[in-house]
Amino acid sequence: MKIKYTTKNQRISIEIENDSIKDAFKHLAEFQEVFDQEACGLCESDNLQMIVRTVDSNDYYEIRCKDCTAKLAFGQHKIGGSLFPKRKKQDGSYDSKGKGWHKWNGNSA
Ligand SMILES: [Zn+2]
Image (cartoon, rainbow, N blue to C red):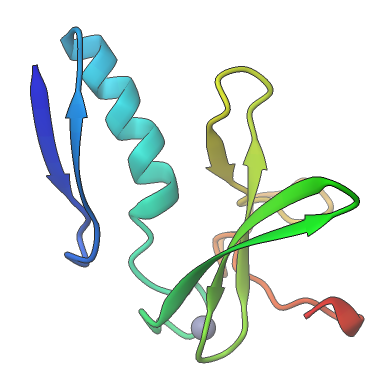
């Protein structure tokens, strides 16, 4: 069973081959969580760029807003290699304002 999907902003289209409905659900869930980011959580710009930074042989996956330089960082599931957006603040509470989008302080930006 093949599924075609296009992100809400029309920029990325994929075709996924699936064994079952559950398989398709998982594939789409993984894809949407990473690629279906419509806009920056801080300035609402859709001028977004995917970035992978490698530091000490660890890869860091993030989406950067090219207008206000805010970033949305992704965590990595230990099994399966999928990614999830980090929506929580450093104190562990849900970031309801920026939905995980934030600006780096210091020199890492
Ligand atoms: Zn922004």
